[in-house]
Length: 51
Image (cartoon, helix red, strand yellow):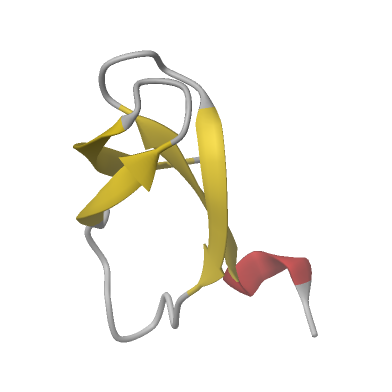
């Protein structure tokens, strides 16, 4: 698997990287934003895709 498909998700509150995932960058051009659980904030917060 190439490293180009891997992305990191960062919490918008505490700015820690909590999740890793894959995406097809040819189909999805913009950055993803998902609501995920942050164990540091102890709440469901929006997580944005980082580089």
